[in-house]
Amino acid sequence: MTPATFAAIAGGEARKLMSYRADFWISTLVAFMVRMAVAWFLWDAIFASTGRTEIAGFSREGMVLYYVLVLLIGKVVSGEERQVSIAQDIYEGRLSRYLLFPGGYFSFKYAEHLGQLVPVLAQLVLFGSWAALVFDLESLGSVSAGSVARAAVAVAVGNLLAFLIAFLTESVAFWADNVWSLNVLLRFVAHLLGGEMLPLELFPAWARLGLDLLPFRFLFHFPAMTLVGRIDAQSWVSGLAIALGWCLVLTLVARVVWRRGTLVYTGVGI
Image (cartoon, rainbow, N blue to C red; front, top):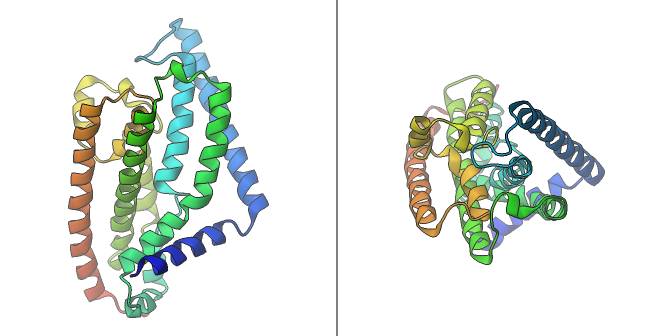
């Protein structure tokens, strides 16, 4: 697939998402404000009931700001959480036409995945600017040009990792009649173990050893903590090496699953 074709596919997906602009922005704003209100009242009650000014290295304002960061960064990593629709292509028999295209199916779907990020980046700028005005960034860490650059690389790797995980999950549709429940389960596990629901600092030390090796923290916690300077350059390099290792492993597994899956694919649909 040529770069021009890749860009055209990504652009078409972005325009599709922005077809209903009012609905897009209203639903986005409401969802964002509701989640921020829940985080604020929850942690305000926790800090008030414990009488502590700091929990696991987070102040009250720093904890809420953390939720803002992982919410915005998570959107850039996973898009709008619209799965890569491989299962739907298999179930409806639409995969057949993609197999006839000169470009690879993986490249086509990844282009669609990246196209979903265009409106999400607008949300990141809008809500990120609001957070910078409302919250004290130093309550969570220190943002610098270097931390922003490292966070951008971490987000790009996390985006690829999220796509590979979704690709593998949806490919189960070659053998299963319904992968929706599997997607929901995987999303819950990723959000919990990746630091979107709770900062990983709240987990016990023995659990952190395992969480640091799993791929999920690179979707939320790792980019957010990198942005605010809580992950130094050496830890960033080692973490990025683990994330890229997971990308390589998942790519190899995806190739095997795809090859086996296309052998049993009939193209009839259901």
